[in-house]
Length: 342
Image 1 (cartoon, one colour):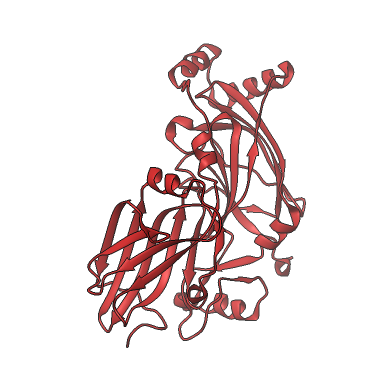
Image 2: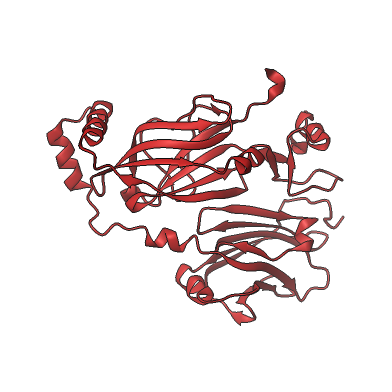
């Protein structure tokens, strides 16, 4: 059994804001291997795409779920019964995504379980050589009106599986059973339940914003500098839709055009000589970037132009200035890379 390597992961429940917290009533996550898996006890937490906490390890390849939950903000019980794409899940649970370089060795975006190079890295007792992360959690995000998004989390890489729609429970028997179980779990009296429903009500709750966050466009980041010694090593991107990824050398140098959601934050590292090591962060403006991308088709570029002295930069979309919320540059970065100046 030890050598079968049944996937091990955590289940997470998140929401876009505290006012949209949901409470789990009944839960089952189906696995290909038939292992019983489920959700954490209690309610959702954190922010969109990240609950901020984990529960007991679950086992197996997740291929679907049957969840009943209560949304206090609209006083509604929902049921989500879904299937995940089986072949895709079988592939994703075997992936290990890069999170740091291997010293003096080229790293790939991801490797599969069983890869001899991965085995060498994972078995090395020196933590600096553990450079790939396996799937750490399956994240369920609960937005208003029954919208549910599911992601696979590898740490610095988070991939969306899909957007699903939970149904309002209207069948009297199912509704009565769900409410009874909810009251037993939380030890509320019916009167207290009604009081809380009024207290936490959000009358205008809707999921339009989080559906907008899922819009995807063909684009890539392009980083340049007036300094001829400029070397870019890593770009970590957090997207509005809850996804994350990291581009490192050597595939960073290829920088392929991809179908992506829009970025919320860029974090990146570069050098222009010995002792000239920098970290930069760009915090995008939500309204600006969505308005500017609206209606765009074909290939697009978000361009970051770093000044020769490394003290400032500008951000453009297809060669037109793009307003952002904040730009930060930190000199004296401690990060070391294989291609660092030595």
